[in-house]
Length: 224
Image (cartoon, rainbow, N blue to C red; front, side):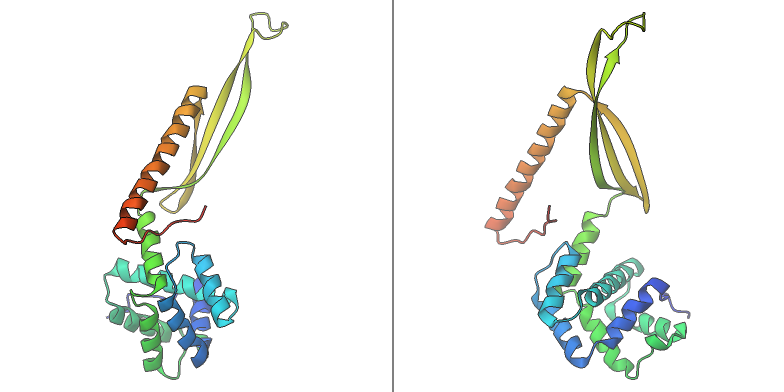
């Protein structure tokens, strides 16, 4: 049966980086991702791990992106970690890339399996991100443009009779991997209502946080 996995070109360097970790670096990496707290900002998690191990942050970020992708593939394909690792090894061997070869595949399988354990900070972080982004449309950023629009008289040579203020809300979002956006016109009362709704949403979040803290439950947050 053919392998369900392929090694995309963009992840080959990250796999090679994982293979290049020395035994001491690998042991330190595996220990650190078990000890660290989950963080929705994976770049900050990479920075913390890199500083603890004195390894270049860029190398750690590549490895973290690789492991996150593998965890998503495992979820999407419905594989156990053992099956995923077996598929990954087969894909690496089939790639024909020298940098993806290993002299001790059993050692590699054991280390990558440990790195993909659901007990690690990385696994919890990536699953949390997946849950947060499991929507058809994901907000990217917003912008409000404000301008005055003149009310002209029939005689255009005369000054405008008055002006109105118009706010245009731009919402950019991602849908099915594509960047999209839409625009909505608002007046002052609309802006006030929207601000109140957002303030209310933050109060609801604070109430939920208090509830979970009382029960000793952990909430992962995106840093502003």
